[in-house]
Length: 219
Ligand code: SF4
Image (cartoon, rainbow, N blue to C red):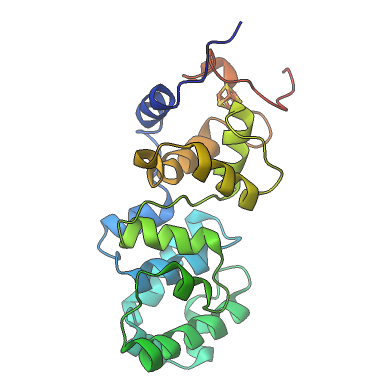
């Protein structure tokens, strides 16, 4: 018999459990000083469909050459492409990053505003990256749902949603606001190392007694 799901306790236990693991990429970059909305946005785009082990050094490589909209706009698309070539879909991302830098210069005087509508109007930017920027760089409560957050919160039985976008809507209706930024920070390492895609480590999981283990096959 499972206990009722207690989100506050789950967050506390998971934050202790993930302490030994590397931080989620965007949070690690922010702590290293790459914490402007523009840097967070570009790093998030580089990370799309790309492992953190690749996307982190790739973002650092680009930022070593250019990390403001002005500096990035002064690179050619080919130069950006060469700097981010380790990232998946780098050619398309290079063109989008260049266009974003130019638009921020032309339309927002070189400063990317902390505004969801503006972020989502930029090429290649979806709700996941927009909300990470708002949460990490702008300090605005926002929920960023990647594949880990989607998988884990559905396994808990906390939400029941078929896509990350629907999970985001369901979490916005249910998750206490004080956890909105942390849910991504915690569930990315938790999903990578404990509640993994194929064989979640339920027997050693700190919230086994309250998780519904939805869709988890017995091992
Ligand atoms: S008990 Fe299993 S399914 Fe539930 S959160 Fe822990 S690892 Fe994931």
